[in-house]
Image (cartoon, rainbow, N blue to C red; front, side, top):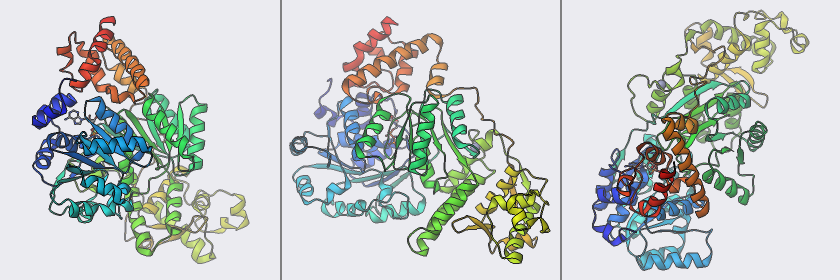
Length: 614
Ligand code: ADP
Ligand code: ZN
């Protein structure tokens, strides 16, 4: 190794960035956070996924005296985090319940001897007296609290163990603390500051925008087929995550993809721990796997080349949706966030809320979260602008990289259609004291003589057949949008439709209802233009593309030999640049972003050999 860690401590932050991590310059306000923490200040850092939060504590860890203690809930990923740091020559270790006694003793000894730069801990470990006693015997440079939104009870990821972290401040008042998260509305942010005792901390809030992610929300028809189309047309051979609401649909979807020739794995809480761990390992280590999962999967997954995140069911909140979609494209390359959403989703989610445990306030909170999510689905505005709004940022104009910007939906005056539908519900309910689901109401409007229509003599209703001007899909869109706006409600086990207090305003012509037009068929903005791994290669000049492939093959073999994920060796972006620049000496190679001293001395010669053979 070219430099010993003790030398590093006398370096300033920029030299550490260049020598250790091989990057040229700081991004956003990394520099400000680092200077503030190095000087002993507390910080609350909000940056989107992929924004570069890790360096905000890793560099102070190297510059300040002592060991940085990193609190993270992601036990299963600690080994990877430590491997990635070891690969750049940083001394890191972790203590958690998965470790055997020997490994634990070694890390403890290294900590006490001051031979670690970073020590990763699960929050529950800090509840144990023995851990606290150990920590007290060493010298702590700083505390980093990762995934800090887990302390918020109104957020979407609450972990009770996080509440105890306020004691860090009381026990180690002189040690700076930096809390980091990729997701927080202003309310959640305030809660984080209060609960962690970070009220005097400086807040660093980056823009939440992820310009490389293309947001798309499409009407749900045959969701698995639609998904397959997306993967085949736009993401062949790419790694991605598909989220489903239930374990059963995770299993079915993974099977369906495998039957159709796509390498997919399932992940949900019903699988045993060993299978879950094995599937996660494979997803991180192998190229181009698709993980079909419930939301149990994904927090802290820092695989940089996830090219798409698809949702087959409606997420419960915008926070959750943003966190999940944020797992795409950490490397800054073009990625897709795709969601298929339909009437059934609204019915199902409303039912879940109605039957959920907890008091009225809790159910109201769930309903408010769902309403914000529905508003995002039904908006005719730029999706990104709507998302940023939600997180308290004002966006200027359209983004040019979401479905509504790429093919602006028409809006139409749906007041009359809404009145027809609401009258149907009214007639059934008030005149006949009957309630039905959306399907039957639409049949009545379309004048279909179904068995049910005959059975209840609904062809004698005055509304029978008055809705022939719209197609069935359009009527479903009307129902969905009325539900989203609270102008209609669903009730009970069968999802029957009922009027709300606000319905009267529409029926009484005191309110107009603008709607999003249901497209005949949504053409994908990029159909025929493959992205991801395929594009990464396609966009390179032909000679460089061949070299890039060989570099990837070398990386895959090296990663396998060492049992680490490929991106721990080098990121795609770094290999791309090597393929394009074609350096012929170690000095030239060292100028490539992502090639620091440790990796240069370890892999430099091998890379030059691969290049020379190309
Ligand atoms: P976050 O934790 O905020 O999601 P990471 O810390 O994992 O993001 O950083 C995202 C990616 O950006 C990583 O691959 C990281 O190596 C890279 N990165 C971070 N800071 C810089 C920088 N200043 N220059 C170049 N790459 C950077
Ligand atoms: Zn947009």
